[in-house]
Structures are given as C-alpha cells and as structure tokens.
Amino acid sequence: MKGMQLRGKSSGAGAVEAIIALGILGLIAVAFIGGLSTTLKAVSVTDERSTAQAIAQSEMEYVKSLPYEYGITGYGTDPNLALNGYALAAVAAPLHDTDDGIQKVMVTVKHHDKDILTLEGYKVDR
Image (cartoon, rainbow, N blue to C red; front, side, top):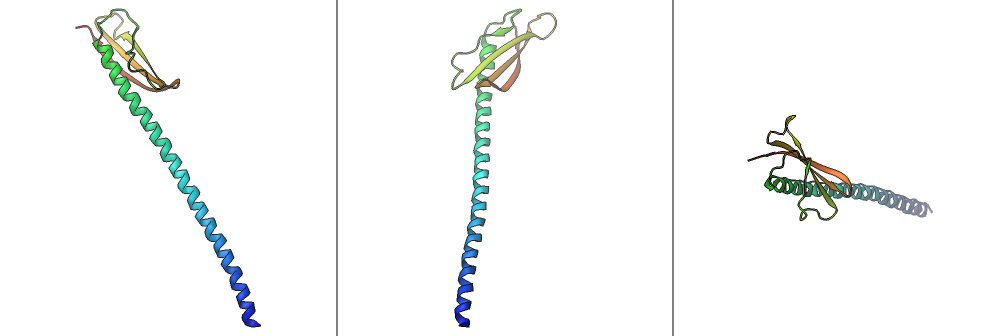
C-alpha cells in the first residue's frame, strides 16, 4: 500500500510541473510578441521618416530650380512627389527685412495630416 500512495503523489506533482512550465512558456511568448510589435512599429516610423526625408530633399531641389521671385511667400510643389498620403508645402521668406535676393525656404512634409519633417534651405537670385 505504501507503494501505491507514492505513485499517486508523484503523478499529481507531474501535472503541477507541466502547468507551471506552460505558464512560463506563455509569459515568454507574450514578451516575444510584445518585442515583435515594438520592432514593427519602429520599422514603420523609420520608413515614414526616410520617405519624408527623400521627398523633402527632392522638393527642395525642385524649388531651387524654379526662377527666383521677389516678395513671394511660397512656391508651388512638384506634383510628382505627393504620393501615398504624403503632402508637401514650400514656404519662402526673405532672409532680411528687405528681399535682397536671398530667401529662406522651408519644406514641410505631412503624412496623413501629421507633420513628419521640416527641411530648411536657402534660395538665391542668380
């Protein structure tokens, strides 16, 4: 009879160990999925910023290629650059109180109505 009592106690201990092991594996899985989610979000933000940077640089070059206009507050944007929910705005202002042929140009890129990047540069009347 003593042998039978030992077998009963050891089989119950195995079930408890299995439940604890499954609990530990569950916690590891939740931590892994949380890390994966954070990584995917970081990749998405990085992709959005690098796309905005490329669009802003292209727009800045487009604005610099346009003829210089005195007293202007903004330049038209390149229609080929607005894509996939990205929007552009190119604002110009004289560098000094009087427009002496140097303007500060700010190109702002938005994605889904959220400001992503503002690039500043200068346009000179040549």
